[in-house]
Amino acid sequence: MNTPKPHTPPPDAIRQARLAAGLTQSEAADLVRSSLRGWQQWEAGDRAMPPGLFELFMLKTGQWPFEGRAAH
Image (cartoon, rainbow, N blue to C red):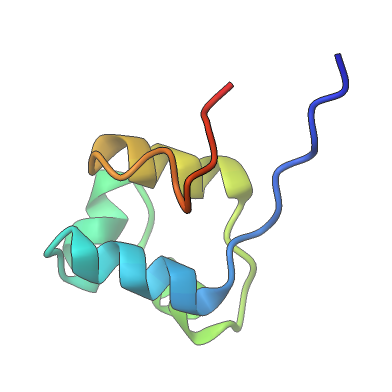
């Protein structure tokens, strides 16, 4: 089976997911065991968020599947 490779989420999607979960940047970072600065860089687009970490955040906040995609 050929599963498509997950893509790095765009900064706006990261921010929107955090806001939808009702979390501060610090709380969101803690949830995925990241630093606050790292989270800020992902939302600012200064650094790419690993796709697996975004999936973890979405799962932990009950927002998966994202954009209608089915989880495999």
